[in-house]
Each structure stands twice: as structure tokens, then as C-alpha cells.
Image (tube, rainbow, N blue to C red):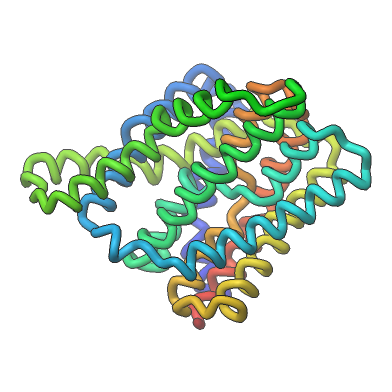
Amino acid sequence: MLPIFLKTLPFFALIGLGYWAGRSRFFTSEATAYLTKFVFYFALSAMLFRFSANLSLEEVWDTRLVIAYLWGTAFVYCIASIVGFLRRLDVPTNAIEAQCAAIGNTGFLGVPMLTLLLGPEAIGPVMLVLAIDLVIFSSLIVILITGAREGQLKLAMFKTIGLGLISNPMVVAISLGFAWSGLQLPIPEPLNEFLAILGGAATPGALFAIGASLATKSAERLQIAAWLSFCKLVLHPLLVAFAALLLFKVDPYKAGVIIAAAALPVAGNVYMLAEHYKVAPQRVSAAILVSTAVSILTVSLVIAQVSKL
């Protein structure tokens, strides 16, 4: 495990550097917001477009992998929801907690880290995980919260979901990349170099932005944060491993990639959703902070195990 830990350490060191910059106010909240926007709309989108434009959908799509990841993620989502129901949480709060338990930081942390640690072949499975999280589970939380508040499902809600998806730069970048690949259009060398340079900023920029944003988070309601972190860092990868390796017999390498993706800490966009809908942002903040700190060890452990597959 030590060699893997030493390989993951620089990624978490960048997060730590961002945390120091935010905590010391060397990097203000406004600066963090603009850095995050740059990474989200430009650097990470360039990286995802370049990756997907150089792959065909046939190379990436794996039905067994998709079903296995869906099964494992839905299972931990249900566990968190049942526990929340037993604690008599309302539907919106329960949905937010379940999202914390099941959705990891695949975009900002998983894409740059796993493709470097597990090899370029990991990008296909990682993008499938990212697409499932964005399209299915990000839509599900909107349906649950909006439906609970309005007492019914309205057509306008699905319009909101659709607009949210087509305005998400990661979804757009992946879709355009596969469209480009499907048309078998070569990427002109100047464009390819431009995308490589811009996409190269995604890894350090995203990790620094994660750390800087963590500096604004508070560690309140630690018992709940610990439970949600346990779901995300332990139960989620275990359930995905069970589904991928035993139930659906996914290719061992691809299974290892999605297990590692499932082991990532709580995604920052869950906090954005909690803030937007005014549903338990403090407990989401704590879950992100605790799960990211603990994942320094747990992610290394998981990657060390899946590397043996």
C-alpha cells in the first residue's frame, strides 16, 4: 500500500495546499469561486472533450459495467435513505444525505487522479461513472426534492432537469467529444495542442480548488458526517465491488476502476445542490470535509487492492 499512498500523496498535497490558501485567506472565497469556474467550464471540459474525441463510444460503453455501478450506487443510496427514514427525516433532507452517501468527486478528483494512477485506459470507465452520476442521480435528487415540496411531479420539473444537463459543461464536453469521434473527424494539430495545454490545467486547478473550497466548510454534526463518510468511502466501493466482480462479472481492470471511483469522497456539487434548495448545507459541508480528510488513507487502500485485479 505504501507505494500507492506515495503516488496519491501529491494529489492530496495539492488539496492541502488549496486548503491552506483558503484558510489563511491568501485565496479568498471569490478567488476560489472563479478558479472553480475556470476549471469547470474550461480546463476540465477541454480534458474531457479531448479524451472522448479520441475514443469511440463502442470502446467506452460496457453494459455490465454500467449495470454493476448502478446496482452498487443504488444499493448504498437505498441504505442511506432507509436509515434517514428511520431517523424521521423529511424527503428533501433524506435525498441530500443519500446523495452524500452515493455520489463521489469523480469530475474534479476522479478524472485527473485515476487516469494518471490507473493508466489512460481508465478514462472510459471513469467517464461512464461520471455520466451516470450526472444524468441519473443528479436528476433523481431534483425529482425527490421538487416532488416533495410541490406534492406532485410537474412537466416543468423535467424541463429544469433537461436544461440543467445540457448546460453542464462536463456533459456537453463528453457528448461533443463522442459526436466528434463518431463523425471520424481528425482533431487538427493546433486544436489538439490547445486542448492539451488547457486540459493540463485541470488536474492542479481542480485539486487546488477542492482544497480552497474545503476551507470554507464547517465540521458540524460530526456523527452524521461520519455515517455519510462511512457510506461513501466504505459501503459504496464494497457494494460496487460485489456487483462488478461477483454479480455481473465485469472485466477485472474496468471493475477496479469503477471500484476506485466509488471510493472517492463526497462530491462538492452536492453542497451546491444543498445550498440551492436550502436543504441541510451544514451537514453536507461536514460530510465533504470529513470524507475528503479520511479518503487520504482509504482511497490509497482501495487503489492498492484494485491494482491487484
